Length: 74
Image (cartoon, rainbow, N blue to C red; front, side, top):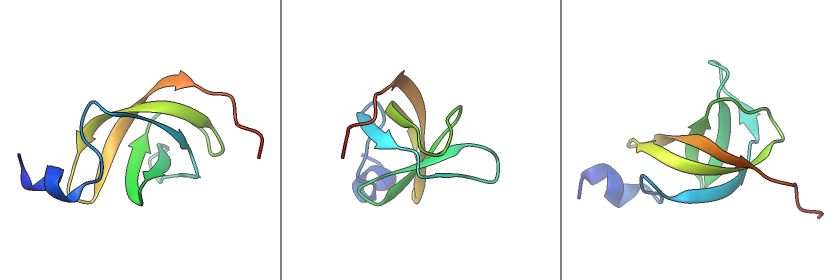
């Protein structure tokens, strides 16, 4: 197990349902899982999507959209 996997609350291959709460400087959507920042290409702020973790770094990670989801009614 690498050092990154011990500190990050997510692991490569896991899936999560997330809100895209911002868009980064390079145009990728930004989501958070347990406070951990994930960059997700091809989404807009406000999207609700199922993502799959592709790469985990020390302070952030990268994920891809697996499915567009319906936003739950709050």
